[in-house]
Image (cartoon, rainbow, N blue to C red; front, side, top):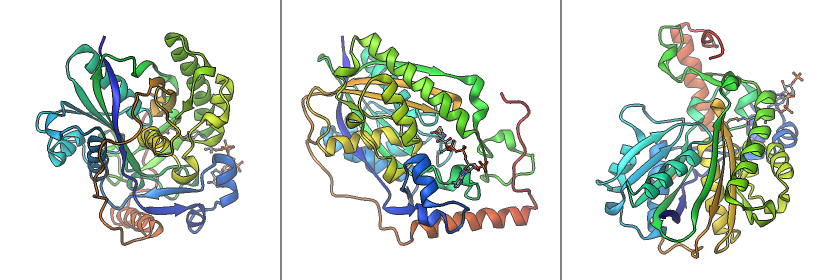
Amino acid sequence: MNRAAITGWGAAMPPAVLTNADLSTFLDTTDEWITTRTGMQERRISHVSATEMATLAARRALACARLDPGDLELIVYGSCSNDEQVPNSASAVQARIGSARAASVDLNTACTSFLYGLSAASGMIRAGSVRNALVIGVELISPYMDWENRNVAVLFGDGCAAVVLQATDREEGLLGDDLGCIADARAALRVRGMGCAYANRGIVFGDTAWDFDGQEIFRRAVQGMTRASAAVLQKCGVTPEQIDLVVPHQANLRIIEAVVTRTGIPMEKVMLTVQRYGNMSAATVPVALTEAVAEGRVKPGSFILMPAFGAGLTMCAHLVRWGDRVAPLATIEDGLPPCTKTALEMVNDVRALKAGARERSGAGLQPPALAGGG
Ligand code: ACO
């Protein structure tokens, strides 16, 4: 049976770094609180659009696989922070990389969007619908962040990475997955102001207020990712001892430690980026995977476990077997355009914009809640 081998990988990380000290210039927080509760020290703030990050990551991944963009058959764009809703974002990437033949779809399951996209694209390759695919995990959260809310503002960052999948008869690529959604907890994480449900409710379009029950998400995330990890290992007949590397969603160091300990895998086998990038939602797993390959932590034939959770609350765990190649076939020279502002300056620009818009409209700080938790 066809499988979908990962043959290309590439990231596009914005250069501007927002430190814990930067955050404490406008929030009642400290480096000590953020580091001990989350493991995070820094995150990135993007000066370019999400689709611009995605375009660079896509071009790097295609070069890595030496796949001509004109031969690409599917683009899956995993994100919950799109530049615009219509037209979709995958079509923007398609146009910019010159993949005129590629079917182009956006997929949003919040932080699990990249991994759900990996399942969807691998399934289409196995079914014979397409022979190859580009799966992107990208997030531009900074414009949507409620920067006045310390409960959430310290946790998130921007970033992007992508992988290329190609049909193979070899036993590699996605070996199995376990997907789920704990919808009774969907009210635990809601960004009010990101959809038309809020129209005519007295809020400034694009302004947001985050409903965020951190402890509830923490508890459900640990339970859900541990259960999904056990399920996918059991489905594939692979033991925790056989896992060479864990590339988990990076929402909180303590969540990751709890999940791998319960799964029976030592922390030395875990790829961590949470200290440097915070939670980039859909981008965390592909960025960590790309960096793990670059650091030599992915070996030919490695078994890689990738557990994740996101708003919804969506849950999953994926088991991938890496192929023979751990080096790119080609690279490109291009990067993102130079960034002329510091991360803190960009964040303060967003804060000023939102404060000004609220003042002009007379709207309150908090968008009204949707009725009920559903
Ligand atoms: N700085 C200082 N104090 C803070 C901050 C901050 N940035 N944020 C909260 N606090 C305060 C709280 O107000 C609270 O004060 P109180 O006791 O006076 O009420 C105190 O710190 C303790 O808060 P807790 O909620 O008990 O802290 P906890 O140890 O649970 O850590 C955290 C909070 C980090 C949010 C944790 O619950 C967590 O990581 N949850 C999961 C978050 C997550 O994964 N989010 C993403 C989910 S989905 C996705 O990825 C899109």
